[in-house]
Image: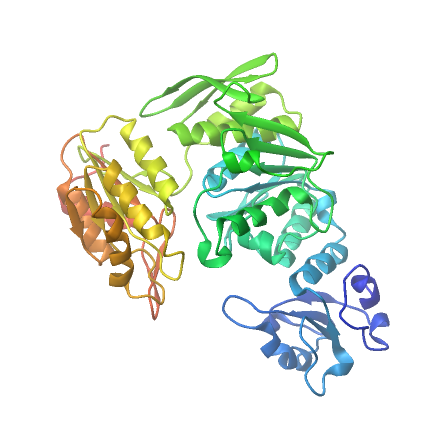
Amino acid sequence: MKLGELLSGIRLRRPAPPGLASVDVAGLEYDSRRIREGYLFFAFPGSRADGRDFARAALERGAAAVASESAAPVGLEGRWIEVDHGRRALAHAARLFYGKPDEQVALTGITGTNGKTTTGFLIDSVLRAAGFTTALVGTIEYRLAGRVLPAVNTTPESLDLIRLLAELRAEGGTHATMEVSSHALELGRVYGLRFHTGVFTNLTRDHLDFHVTMEAYFAAKQKLFAGEGGEPPAFAVLNRDDSYSRALHVAPETRVFWYGIGPDSDLRALHIVSGSQRLRFDVQYGKQRFAVESPLIGKINVYNILAACGAGISYGLAPEVIARGIASLRAVPGRFERVDEGQPFVVVVDYAHTPDALQNVIAVARGLNPKRVITLFGCGGDRDRTKRPLMGQAAAELSDFVVLTSDNPRSEDPLAIMNDALVGIRRVDKPLVVEPDRATAIARALNEAREGDLVILAGKGHETYQVLQDKTIPFDDRAVAREVLRGYGYHPQA
């Protein structure tokens, strides 16, 4: 494809150098290490490095040209394209280069604070129950036509995402489901993509280290439904019981399905029965009513399942197909995931890392009627400090025993992070253990547990690592808990 074709529709800060429009482009890349002869290199700031620092090296490796938001360094003017927005330019060029796969693959985007991952797994399960070949993109992993790939970001860079959609199309796939983070929306990673269905779960305090205010955080989420750089979604599946969801501006041409427990929802949950093993309720949609059952439990999963039902209806799927897909999802890694080594108390691992998510997971635990709830949690470093005391207060108010430990401290002092959380914990008089070493803290939480108790290991969920100040180490709450329980003499039942 000619460079001039790729640049059509991209806002430039100044005209491209003469002659570049007729250059053949062999590929696109934003990582200079992957540059090959004839590639167009997009150089923009990243979370760990600034691609503009590697522009000269990319050209030396054979790049046809560099696209960047900054002015050309001395000597590179003839092969430099100054664009208005680097990531938007990459998204636009990638769609053209790969033949707009988002127009051949039906794309569902899920945004919100809590529930995105579980809702994504549920929607993908529903689509596969309908016989479709699918892709799933999210926090835990990427799935492509039955293959499992490691997840780099919740929402990958536009080039990687469009490549994945093109590969799905080549393998006969028809539907893709993806979590759409607020970072991705704000940075332009999904700019111009055509979404068939947009799903909004809820909005609670998170990521204010990046967005600064809740208003800015909400504005980023809004972008999914505005169709920035392209058309708005054909369908929107929105949580009627969430105040931010009700405040969304949806395009007039978008058909909205409201879901919730209240009487003014299009998809409403009735006769909810949540036990220790299963969740069951009826879905009322217009004159239709159908039953759903799921191994996922708790009120939060009522909402996640309703959202998945709404997405299924947006694709015209029959109620029995939707119900089959819901029932077939046995578990979501790191989401109220049980660790069972034959101990007389329940141990679950959950990704809850916001005040609202922590409240939700403890509420699910309370619904199982344990003798006591023991909650272990920590707060991430280099993230929103203001939510730390709120998490501490939530854990102390709703639990019977609290173990405060470290999460992913990153560049911060773990003790300083824990002190922020202690401010909230000390507002409530509850038994407390403070232990910065997470493995030791897990051992102390499990040692405290007695028959009939329930232990929540919150914060890291599916993660298999811990990010420290100077290194990243292998660490899996589930594996550590199993090792501790076995050390206490428990063994899985045959």
